Amino acid sequence: MIKQQITVKLNAIAGKYAKEKGLENISFTVEIPPKNIDADFAVNAAMIIAKKLKTNPQNIAKELIEIFLKELPDFISKAEIAGAGFINLRIKDEILHKELQAILEQKEKYGSLASNNKEKIMVEFVSANPTGPLHIGHGRGAAIGDSLARVLKHLGYDVTKEYYLNDVGNQMLVLADSVKAKYLQIKDKNAPFPQDGYKGEYIAEIAKRLADKNGNINDIDFKKEAVKDILATIKADLKDFAVSFDNWFSEGKIAFDKDADGKTEVDKACEYLQNKGDAYVCDDALWLASTKFGDDKDRVLRRSDGRYTYLASDVAYHKNKFERGFSKLINLWGADHHGYVTRINACVQMLGFQKESLKVILYQLVSLIRDGKPAAMSTRSGEFITLKEVVDEVGKDACRFFFLLRAPDSQLEFDLDLAKKQSSENPVFYVQYVNARCNSIVKESKNEKNLPSEIDYGLLSTKEERELIKQLAAFCDTLSLCEKTMSPHHFTAYLMELADAYHKFYEKCRVLNDDPNLTASRLKLIEAVMIIIKTALALLGVSAPEKM
Image 1 (cartoon, rainbow, N blue to C red):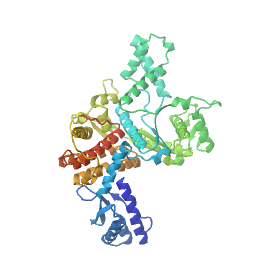
Image 2 (image 1 turned 180 degrees about the vertical axis):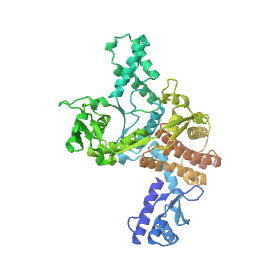
Image 3 (image 1 turned 120 degrees about the vertical axis):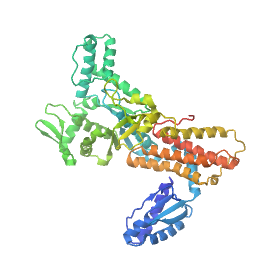
Image 4 (image 1 turned 45 degrees about the horizontal axis):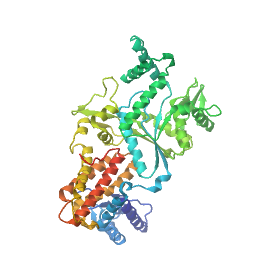
């Protein structure tokens, strides 16, 4: 956590200096300079202060450098002015070596903060309607949601992953009618099929299973049977994708289950809003006064015929989440739900919770590329490319890594040919190969004799060794960035940069050499690389093979 440590120290020192100059509440940034600059950190304090005082930043920088070196003699080895007033800092090698030892001691717990364990976070994602198999869009949402939950758990939060099963409403009736129609067509191919019915091949397969039972059609609950089959497929596909849920929450629980007074959770949630004055009756329908919280118009909760809308169920569901003790709710939705965010935020506030207690992450679509051209997105059944098809073609690891190459709000091009390449061009192969190579070196080191038990970390002083240790330490900064942006995609970029740093080290620094002390210290560095790569890949749901 070197960057976090030095940021706190520098801000305190520069803040005190600014206050002595009559400036209050001045904030500075500490950045990692470009790789062509021989420095570990750069701080813009001199520029900020000089701008406020309308003076020369070079003079401020000189004074700050003198104070930094005096106040932090055990931390900073070199400080100099760069450009228009940036201060470039080089930290002492001992600081890097301490961080390396922390990685070796804490292993896969490195970066975890026990102080976070009091906050309960709900991450709800995928939640695809049980009307068909998961497609690649669902797959991207699954990769983002699952990896984000892993990151938050690593940071020490009490995280629950939940799948909200929309098993209520008109879509379920259409599903049941579709399966029933296919069932009837087995005996009479001219039997009618609903115009808006689900036409996928999976519908015919469910119907065939039911027909093979030779049961009486009047004894078949087509909705129940269809949901059971489709949900089993969804669960199997998610398992193969290394995604598991702590809880599967049925919409039917809040829509149909009644309390002693004969009321459902949807009934009670709507009554709560109405009693608060946040819902009102007009033309025999119940309306949510969502315009009070920025929505473009009020929304219907209960139609004039008494049927509740999806929004009413969502209000009750979010109320249920908070009542289960979660202080932070994270929802992952497809970008087509953009217009829904404002009204859900309104609902959360109407329920008496802070707007910040709900974070909705919208993710963009995925387009497949094959042979350098857009691949057809429909299957032979005329539906869509399923998640299973892509996982079967490129493998779970490549699929998850590629889904996480971009921020959720960026459209993603998935190059199927690149994902299958066994070369450094393939980013996931490039990263995994580092772990395999490190493992090979460690195995080979078993033949080394006379290696010391005491490690002299001071021998790790070359440019390549320093850069590699710095990149290992940046794991904590990446964790913080993922939490701040609520996106795990930063770890794919981090791992590729770590792989770059490792390869430069490997080319310049022979690990198994004639100096037993140097060999022992570099083996420890290799061990730390393996710890961080395994840990970071695990956060992405990707394996770290020992041999490739």
